[in-house]
Amino acid sequence: MANGLANLHNARRARTPMINIVGDHATFHLEHDAPLTTDIESLARPMSQWVGRVADAQDVRRCTEAAYLAAMRMPGISTMILPADAAWTNVTPGIEVPIDLPPLSAIAPEKLRAAADLLRGRKAAIILGGKAMRGEALRMAGRIAKARGIPLFSHNASRMERGAGRVAVRPIPYNVDQAVRTLAGFEAVVCIGARSPVAFFAYPGKPGTLLPTGCAAVELAGDEHDYVSVLEELTVELGVAINAPFDTNSLTTRDLPLPSGKLDPDTLTMALARFLPENAILCDESISSAGRMAELAPFAPPHDLLRLTGGAIGIGIPLSVGAAVACPDRKVIVLQADGSGMYTAQGLWTQARENLDILTIVLANRGYSILKGEMRNVGVNEFGRNARLMLEVDNPAIDWCSLAKGMGVEAGRAETVEEFVSLLRAGMARRGPFLIEAVL
Image 1 (cartoon, rainbow, N blue to C red):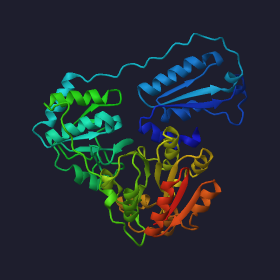
Image 2 (image 1 turned 180 degrees about the vertical axis):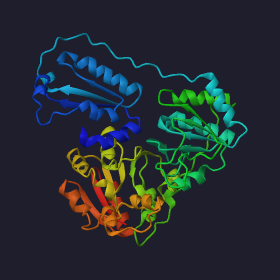
Image 3 (image 1 turned 135 degrees about the horizontal axis):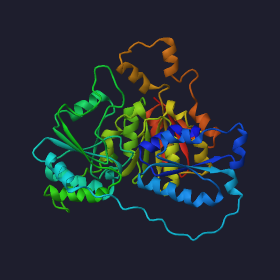
């Protein structure tokens, strides 16, 4: 469990329903303080919203049901500690009773009216997150946006539907200065499935909240609510027809002219947007090498995006594994920064072992460019030798092709756009894991 804490943090921030089962010594062995004995509850608690310990074999069912209810209701991570002797102790069979999840909460009418009042007569915006970023909930938000001229934003959304034919939602930039400029001038925001936006870090002389001074904000609905119902009620409250039209973008990335020459984040993402398969799942841990993907994605074939919600690096490769296991009939593509990819490179072996249909694109800029940017944000513009050594991964440079092949994943290296497009086409056409080391 300790080895997985960083991505358990990401799962917690994404509000992912998860039951995390942690093995422990047999109940009668704990008193001997064997080498692996530790305080599992204290390790689990910061990343879990429910922690329970199975008392004995007969207690497994009760504890499992409690873990399931907690994970689904909140939703989030339940950690269940399972002693080894539960595996070999006889139990008395019980009567199996289905578990009913509690109904989702309704929105108080006065809160709904307050949100609608904010959206009337002011320069207002709606910020979406959670399951409001897909399906009928997203289409409902699109109807409000078109009818009322209210822009839609997302902030740290963990999963979203995007692409041509879908409602376009503008992401609030990670960079604090860009985010403040994006939201400047708004007098009110209503958050549905999202919190009022704040900066990722504190910086000298820069705001912690991204909303302009005096901007009113209402967090209307969270994961305990039915987002479709909430948005339907808000639509009616605003006088918009339930079946009103909503704006979508057309598919234009297929017609993008192919760039040529040196490979960089812009040319790479232009090529990817052009050849992205329909209904793909894109896992994005591109960090500082995102290029033009956010700009082009609304005009690309419809796809799902999974993002680094919690900020703990090393999620891209594991996220792609989970997506490919969940959706074996869909192509999974991961944009993986090279520095953060080293935290969980062993996931490539899992891709090979399970023969998962994943195309991994390693954005090899040979450094932690995001950390260099954060240092500049706090006023450090000149890096000394020791600082550079901590922020670069080029001495020696990581050979991602050899690393992938050593774990059973076929790979190729691209330094030009032409080489990248050739490998991209090959990776899209085949089924199974493939890796492209894109040298930027």
